[in-house]
Length: 82
Image (cartoon, rainbow, N blue to C red; front, side):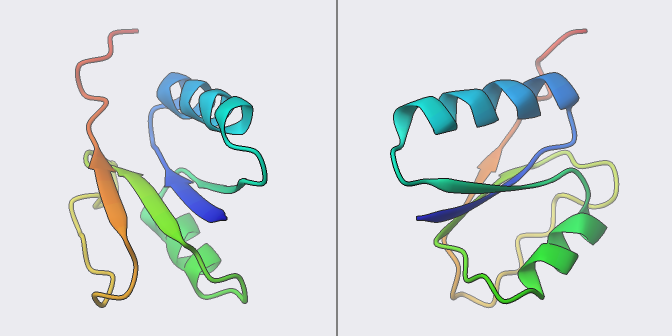
């Protein structure tokens, strides 16, 4: 399974990646921290099965446009404190 994790908060990003890698055998996690990085990944040759994205990305994470062909789940890490 190909999963794209888009998270702008570094601690949340690392923690979620670690959990996903430990729980899901055969999962390949692609990582992005910005909308620009996300678009670069999505323009590549790998077809994603699922996208988990940070609703509060600093460069426009509230965009949910996926063309209706890509399952996406919004994640809000806004309650995390540093």
